[in-house]
Length: 424
Image 1 (cartoon, rainbow, N blue to C red):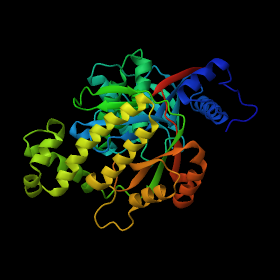
Image 2 (image 1 turned 180 degrees about the vertical axis):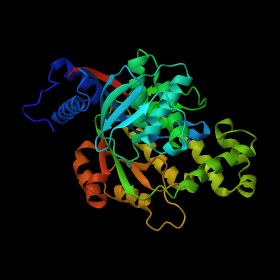
Image 3 (image 1 turned 90 degrees about the vertical axis):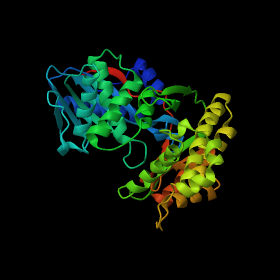
Image 4 (image 1 turned 60 degrees about the horizontal axis):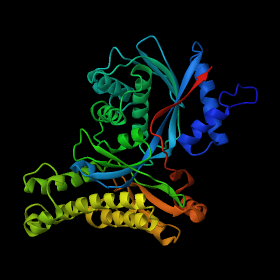
């Protein structure tokens, strides 16, 4: 923590304007985090006289549940929780990172080939991002950094993606003159997670974090997704993510089942993904599909088509400033995930974390819209609450699920970015 006799690095009005643009406001807590991190960097790397502050946010999925893997549409947003870093370039090939509560991690950029033993580690993520940069004609180089994170793990806001995109942004600013696009940084991060970390994922999480703000992302072309900004200006709602509990580790087959069901319907029509067929075609052949594939697969396909339409409707509602229409879309999305997609609870699950949490939120009378957040079966829900009900809602959910599982978030306009320089 910063003490009275520590140098205060970040007390100036010009910086306050920069911070306000990124975070929405400038709190004492934010200044304390920044100052503490600068002192940590100075203690860890005393030979360096200048540092650069970076910030990489978490993300939420607003609408578009399980659509991206079939070339569909999603709406996602960067949010206020973030990873902060103070970093500086070095004249060697070493990336050295000190993170809160972890021993120093050092990656030699002369040795970034994939190694099985590194799977599932942050070390592998740095290697993977570096490998993507190098193989796509971008530059990398050594840097020293201290990281501190407020992106909660296990809350469905993508702490690993925030880390990956942060590393990409540091390489971008230090060695590529800031010219690497947001989507390219997202691709580098996805590559690191898929190939090096060993976790299959789409591009949504990384894209939302790299882009900032609220965006409709159309994955019709997965290599070059179309990004349509949604001008989020609503001041009447607070956004909550609630960790309802449950363990994702034994749900691999359930997640795969969604993908397999949707792909099986696409295969029936001799196409690679549902994006290449239509709801009317599925309904036309519903009887045959239900017999040759399964009734559940038909329902999941219908969810895909209707959910993509809802993403478009959410964009229109935001552009029109129609909060009521937007909330209706979110509730309809949640209902479809429950009724058609069926990703709220696995077979034989008696705890039923997500259905319980969603029902509890709805019955509170304090929640305007609620739906499953992310993969489903266990984990988190997303809720939109009027500001005047926010404190009551937070207490109610915290009393039920625990204070450390209830997160009030704010949409953040900036993606992963360089914030400022600091003389140390």
